[in-house]
Each structure stands twice: as structure tokens, then as C-alpha cells.
Image 1 (spheres, rainbow, N blue to C red):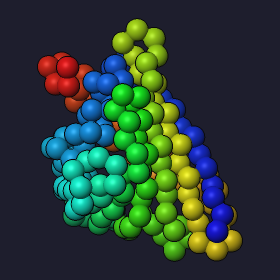
Image 2: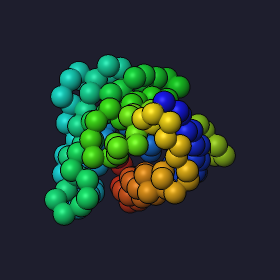
Image 3: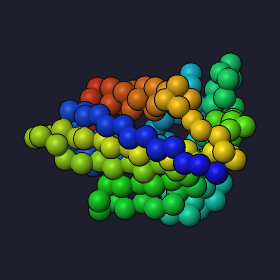
Length: 161
């Protein structure tokens, strides 16, 4: 098995605790199906209640090439705004990939802004090596979801305050 690691960063004009950590991590199972129903049908806990050790399943909307993904929350540090989780099952895991481990951290940037850092570790099967094109689509989908959440929070100043 080999491990391919990528890092991705972006900023948003919303504070870390309000925008991304609460909206995108802690309350994702409520918020994301509500604001992105064309892409995500539901997000449900099949084990646990959202703390470390919990497992949740994302069911994608019909018509897309993905049906579901299952992830385990490895660590959730609400005081430091850090979440680590592992994609353990689903259509996203191709023949090449055994699992994907993500660590997402939300940091205060300039006044009222947030810097989001994501590290992804792709654990491949056998001696498979991944390149940037192999993980590009997942990175683009993650950024698209972040932007949808950002737009929702910016457009609804009374949520997650």
C-alpha cells in the first residue's frame, strides 16, 4: 500500500466557528441536504451521535455517478476547530483506493475571516500510485460544497451566530 497526500487551503469572509466548523462539520447532516438537495439526498448517522467514533452515510441524489459514501469520525476537536475522518466505504473508493483520511482545520485569518486547511491521505491498494488528476475531481467537489455552505451562511446572517 502507498499513501498519496494532498493539501488544500482556501479563505472565506466568515468566522471559523460560525461558518465552516459548525455549518460544514457539526451540523452537516442537517444543513447540506437542505441547501444542496440536487447533489445530496441525505446524511445520516448509522453509528454514534457525531462525536469521535461515529459513522455517517451520505446518500447522493439520483442521477449522479455516486450513490453513497460512508465515513468514520476519527477525531473532533470543537475547541480547536479540527475534524479528522476516514472515508471507509462507498462509490468514491475506486479499485485503486482502500481508504481516504481527511483532516480539516479552521483557523482565524484576518478580521472576521477563516482559513480552511484540508489534508487528504489517499491509501491505495497494492503498489498503485495516484497523480493529481486522480484526486482532482474530489477536490473540486469539496470546494463546490464549501462554496454552497459559504453562500448560504452569508445570505442568512442569523444562522450559526
